[in-house]
Image (cartoon, rainbow, N blue to C red):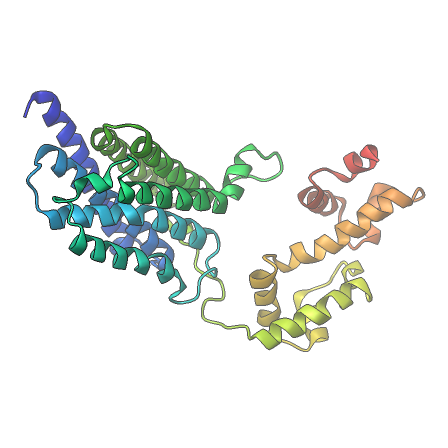
Length: 351
């Protein structure tokens, strides 16, 4: 092995082992571990195993067929675990207890059957990116579809980067980096024939960068709890009957009785009118509507304010805000801009 190959082998292997360490860190060491951190650990683990397979296959071509099959299985799992992580990190309640297994079990069954029927050492050509490389094309197609799904899940985080009204959170920055890093690995894997070299180097850069991000965030806030936001109501279950009942009666209180006009309106007030508990109503708003109570109420207030800005020529903008239930001009402007993307004055001018 020449010096150049030794350097490539060293950095590729180092990236893989660094990824394995990070996967152990997120699975067993980080505080507030839950399903989100486990999916992140699994993602880093399969990336690392996939790179180790390519590194040893490139430099030590006589490794066992079983080791190669494990590496190929890991490659098939990169897309699913990336999608699962981004989805659960951004929407903690998006899967039932074992619902995520539908993305993993078929891959494992397929790879076991493939390893028995078509061992890599005898059917290596089926894994090439050529018309007769059926398994290689299947892998690329599956990985691409899951990558697109993950990018779609993370679209809100990417949009915030260019938004003038919303600021990205630490979780948004983290998600963007994870998705972008996996995209670059996919790009190298799917477009360059020297994938073992390129992906190995990218894996080293990616996992090393993740390590730097961990250090940076821990220095800033001494915790990485934002990586795995626990589901707020993960130990409570809202029955379908309760959800339907609240969904039927809640709009009546705001459309007909206009409870949002009360500037002192509280969650307890609405819950009592619905004859339910505060946490039940809060859970319904978060899980079913994806909104906090204040954001939900302000939505009705802003809609009424927009209507009055179009039709009322007597009241000032501040007066309209007061009429719609806002306690102050500042809260009126903040809520209006959040819901409409512009201030009340800009909205009125646009009319």
